[in-house]
Amino acid sequence: MAEDLAARGVKAGDGVAVVMPRSLDALVVCFAILRAGGVVLGLDVAAPNARNKTLIQRSGVRWSVIGGSASAECVDETTVIALPSGDARQASFASRADPEKDAFLVFTSGSSGEPKGVRLSHAAMVARSGTELAVWNMDAGDRYLMRTPLGIVGLPVLLSILAGGVTLVIADQEDGNRATELARLIEEERITCASFPPRILRDFLVVPDIARKLQTLRMVRSAGDSVDRAVVGRIGEILPACRLVDGYGLTESSGIVMQDGWPFFGVETRIEQEELWIATPLLATAYLDEDRDTESKFIRRTFADDSERLWYRTGDRAQRRADGQISVLGRVDLQLNVDGVRIDPLELEVALRLHPLVGDAAVAVHADATGRSRLVAYVVEGTQ
Image: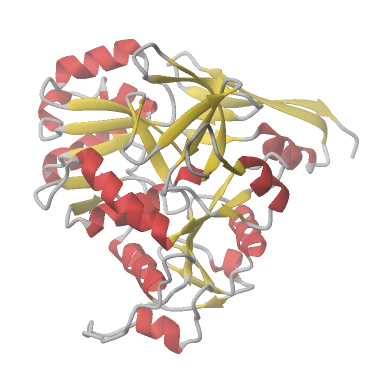
């Protein structure tokens, strides 16, 4: 596939949009783009075509690969590359990857009202591989469940896990957010490690015979939001042999960088005016075409007698406990967290105001009767 991409004109540094459901083909395509020296822009096939088209336009990618139920409408300004047909062949294509160049472009919610592109290098992905494998203590005997879409930072993490020889079991596109189907898959495929947002953990509690279905799990990471103490206690009762850990990370750090309040090896932390700062080889290089935001968030600074480091201002309020553990307490800005997804309400409010019947809008997050976080929009009627 990498050889085919190069033959079609994809050069080192060229972006390639991947609009495909979770699948083996999607992972092959991503590996091929990296090997050809390109930059992967993974997009969520479940997202509206208009949003995916916007991300493609903002990224400036010229190439795309689509598959499954993905619509070609969002990639109509790119050259679409088909998957190679016929039998696989052993090729001698030399990798064109440059450690210091971009490997992934991942979009996150932006404070300007537009999605913000985060640039992640090949070097950061190599560092992520070693970190992820060490934290999970995974080896070739483990089986990890893939349930995240391609359009988030979980994709680099999954490729890192594969690099360690771990078996990756891919949930169908429709089953990735359904606790009942996930429990069935975990039982059938004997999954040993998995990551879930708190909502999925809560949903597991009402699945019949859940203790038997999840008995092969030895480690589960919950990330993106706080987990209710009652849920933690109940999961502990159901799965006494499984370790449940709380992960903290951001798109800009290429994924999780702290677990149970403790930074990973090689991750440094500081709390400046209640805001958490991090320095790590896992950091992104910059934002895409956002020089002002890059300069204000990615800061080179020397503290005390330390050597100069690139620090990232996370925007999260935090405090360090007496034992050194870090507690994350919320945001210093207006950003929201919904099911582990960081959202800037301004981006949603801008979209709502585009509707001819909406004069003004505000967006907030509230918990429903089940404890699940939901976005709520308040609108003022406008004139047509």
